Image (cartoon, rainbow, N blue to C red; front, side, top):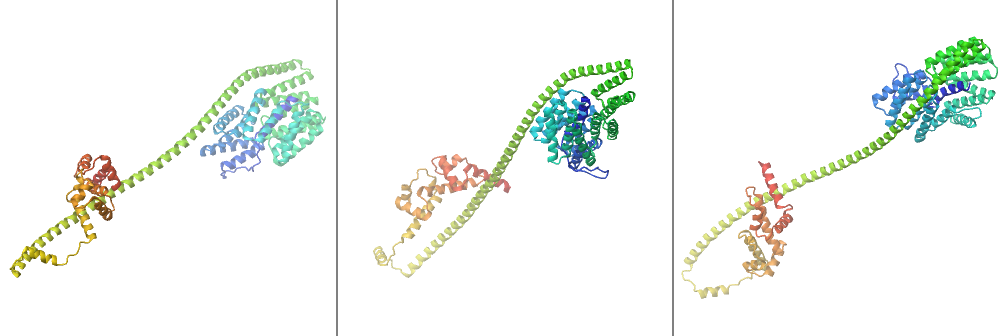
Length: 605
């Protein structure tokens, strides 16, 4: 009897997978739902154990998640499919879906879904393989994932699954856990937790022989069914039938057992149907209807074959053997006892072999999880590195853009300098040419006027004055002293003329004393005049004419004199001085200036 309770209660553990109270509405053919809306419908269908509906909705959710590439809903869809197939008797398909859900959730780093999937895998091994060791391993792993994701509701459900595996009539810890689940559901208005807590309390009070208290919690479970219409209600009626039978109410027990059979068939609960048939057969056995009990037990065996649950065939064989013994059919009783023993031996061998196999699988999974964590960390590091590379690339691109803009701006500035200097040289040459023509014309006119003046004097004054008389007359006339300003201006103009006409700047031996001597003045007065008129010292004055000539030479694209020859011909003592003076005056080096001259000439062409 305890084994039957174990199977029934494990079936209800599916309700411990995940809480869900989202609004559920049957999707019509003309209704288009978003992935989020379908996920809520899946939650509602799962919480109510509507597994056929859940399978349909989860397929739609998987399709939408695949189309949109949604990493959040894809593992949920696979989990729902696995859960629905598990409770409708498709255990192989269920494990494939759960395995895919695990891999997808692991790739997405979704610990919440991993907690759900490993819990479902634990239920599978407990219900269909009777491998409590492996089931516990999955439950413990589910607790780890739930702890990491702070999924408190799943943690409570996993604890419930663990207490089902270890429940006994004197297990006070399990009873306390069931009470905690029930109170949590009451406090948080959670139908699922309340229902499961009430069912567990009924199960424990039945084990303790306190069937009246068990009835009160079963009545509460059925009241919740009347309100929410969950499909897993067959398990409640099966337990209710056992409680009624223990209370001696055979008629009521048969009624509840028959109701459990009908509801398991109606809701396609393949895993609940064998327990309902077996409970009905047990009640008939207690009523002394051994032949009828055997017929129902045979129906239970057929349901076991359809649900592919190995463990449930053993109590069926044992019940049939007891019925045959009571009917005096000793040979058949021995035959069914032998089947039961063989099934237990086979199951033990399968369990041992499967235990080793599952241990290898768990070790492999643990290794894969470790590798996945390493890959996840590597991917995170790679993403950080990629982000840094992107930022560095953007910064570098920005710097290159700034450099390029500055380069273009500088080139335009250099070209403008060259163009302006070329225009200035052209204007200077034109102006100088006009000045030279005017000076020649003026000299010619002055010469002509002088000749005409001498002829007129001779005619009017035929008697020449002696030299002494001329001097006497000249001294007699009043002479004005030359103004200092005029002297200074004349001196400055003569200095400029010597530089421009005579190219004195080209003499590297030229110094201030020699230049003052050529001007007929002293070095101190010369420095004063140059400072007043040009604002430059003597050396700056000379170098300015040298640089102007350098600009003239470099501005001519047809002049290909080497820079060494240019600075040497212009009177500079070293190339460093030439480069320094040129860059200070023009803003760019002589080589860059020449390059820009050639570029401007190319653009003109």
